Length: 280
Image (cartoon, rainbow, N blue to C red; front, side, top):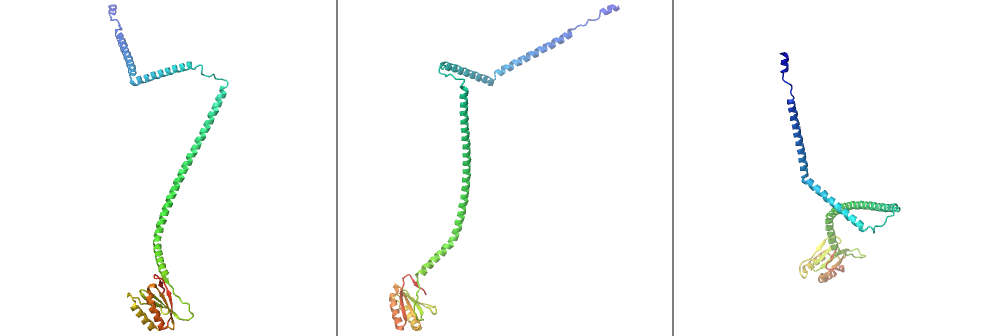
């Protein structure tokens, strides 16, 4: 009974494990397929990118141009193969040395020119700076001159007025005629000015000025007043009469001379210009 029971137990199977392995394998295959599709799609999209496509086209055009230049160069070499001179390889180092020396000399000359140009620019800048300083100084000097001119104008105003006054005074003094008498007798001087306006006189003793002018055409009143003064004074022994005569007073002068003679006065005649005045 017991042996029979052992033979009736269920056997162990691996179908479940096989199912799991199969499912995992399918999933992995599916993932690999998805990755491959993604890679293919990404490559396709990169090829369809317009920027990349344009770059590829540009590269192709450049390659075509280079190939065309190569072809042209080959054709030129074939056409001019006999015209190209042969190069002496032994003399080539000497030629290169000479060419190098020539290049170095030109380089030195160019550096010298650059140095001279830099110095010239520095001189130009220095000249500009000095010019600016000179203009500034000129502006300051101009301002100072304007101040001086303004000050001089302020000072010249009173000076010009004073000069005009002095000139006027000079002209007035110039018109005056100083009368003096050189006599040995000790008689005092009386100056009489005779003009068309009448008579003016001044005595050296008292310094008093007598004005006998009037506006009458015959100067009758003037002559009468002079005659009264002469009779009243009655000093023929102590005074000398100097008569300054203008052209307009020549008629009046005749009567004055006759009066002086009648009164016994010593007298002298001095003609003066019409615009002049005898000093009293």
